[in-house]
Length: 438
Image (cartoon, rainbow, N blue to C red; front, side, top):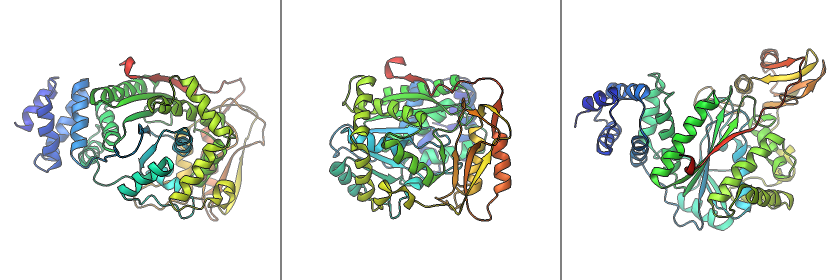
């Protein structure tokens, strides 16, 4: 086989065989195929696409390029959840304890953040003492003991995907549905889940800016799951404005605790119940979304979900007092209100700009070497559809002394549009894609 022949075939819109994709991806991972040839192939994929079988084969070859986590010794059906990313995306912190409290084991590998705010690992490290440095054996034992564990992703999962993504990033081929779908699904499959629930974000603050593109990605990932024998369901959700009200690590942990108490923001609560319902269905705990949501609400109302968070934090070395006393979380030096300059109704909130404001305060990483400040961030006092009077607080900055107050306040003001007409809040759940739909 020759890489040049595969580039030509894909350029001409011909599907590559399983053996050809194996040769291409494994050869690249082993350093036998140079960057310039895989770049040419990726550009051909960008223009010609891949069919469902090709995309599934590509996904499996990226899985086979590294280690696979074997979770077979964990009792029950392991259901993983993945979000395509957004601003204020606190769902994992709520879903993990809530779903585990319903009897579905949660064995999750998560990463650190690069961009707006921290990743799930960074957020959990807001709990003093919390550690995600577990061995696989300890990870599995903890899930069997208490129903939930979370550890950092290992460097040996899907190395071919990491290499290919780095190449796509510098060759303008990131925005390809088959390549995005196979990248996400390869990591989920390698992490050992039996079934997968995907939260595909759409809107100004999401990677998929339009609902049409988000659905296309959701369907591609569900097809991959179907082809490789992993039951997969995708929920398409709104990211035109930040999810919930908190943007920043400790602030999001506090909001997760409030949500597990039944006191969380309506949009975050709605999305967590939707995602959690499909996790319970795939985990064999419920037959319908309505039945599943009733179980989840019951675990919130009777305090079991919050107690599950407490057990989770304790098992991983964190200070459990934080669950009952969130004021023990890292704090900023100053809290500064950003006021509305006019009256009206909040018409739009630029999620990405708000996320970048939080990063400017120190809540996210501009580079992999950047240090996260767990205590800083932004709390939104108003959301789209809320009425505002001039002088009302639109948002609160949690900031360090000497931080960029004026710059962030001005940018935040420009990211929140106020109109004289009534505006309805956005629909949070845009759609659901199941294996039957593809």
